[in-house]
Every structure is written in C-alpha cells, then in structure tokens.
Length: 154
Image 1 (tube, rainbow, N blue to C red):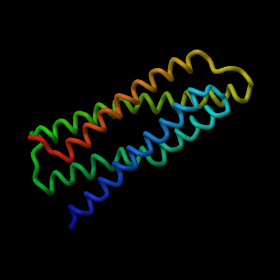
Image 2 (cartoon, one colour):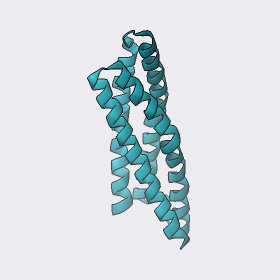
Image 3 (cartoon, helix red, strand yellow):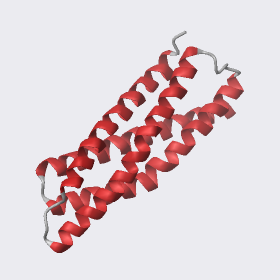
C-alpha cells in the first residue's frame, strides 16, 4: 500500500511539474512573440508565481518519492533506466535553475518597462533566447524520463 501511495504522489507531482512548466512556458513564449509589454509583464509575473507555488514543490517531491519507491521495490541504481532517469533529472534541474533566475530578472525588467513606458532592454531579449533554449532542453529531458519510467528498458 505504501508503494501505491508513493507512486500516486510521484505521478501527480510529475504531472504538475510538466503541466505547470509547459503551460507557463507557452504563455510566456507567446507573450514574448507578441511583444506587448503589458502582456509580457503579466506572463512573466505569473510564471514566477507558478514556479514557486507549483513547480518548486514538485521538483522536491519527485526525487523523494522516486528514491523511496526504488528503496521499497529494491531496485539498484546501476539499472540503466534508473541511472539514465536520475542523470536526466539532474540535467533538467541544471537547465531549470538558471531559467528561474532569468524569469525573475525578466519579470523585473518587464515591470519596470511597463511602469516607465520604456521598451524592454536588449538584455531582456538575450535572456529570452537563453530561457527558450534551456527550457526546450529541460523539457526534452523530462520527456525521455517519462519514457524511461514507463518502459524501464534494460
């Protein structure tokens, strides 16, 4: 029974992690494409809030429940699907941390531009390119992790 509860929490938290990430990324990406400062300020502000409220707890819950299930099921860390999933999770986290920092900076720049009526500075658009690239890399890793968790290839 403990395993089923952990598995349920693990699956729900992975859904929250992926869903919140792709949802906020979509709205922020689309706001940036439109280029309207009020829309960008709204999207960046809410992306930062969503990361703190939904993504961060899910990022913590994922390894806790995953490792606990591995312990209960007596899996070895040397199994390729486990080692691969853990490596990709670390990679995705290494992409996500700078994205969170960039979102906060981008939010602040957008709020200032909105308040002063000035255009967004060039550094905003440079960060936006990095934000997009790192986000795509992290999401690709998460997709592969989903495959590894389901298929458990040897």
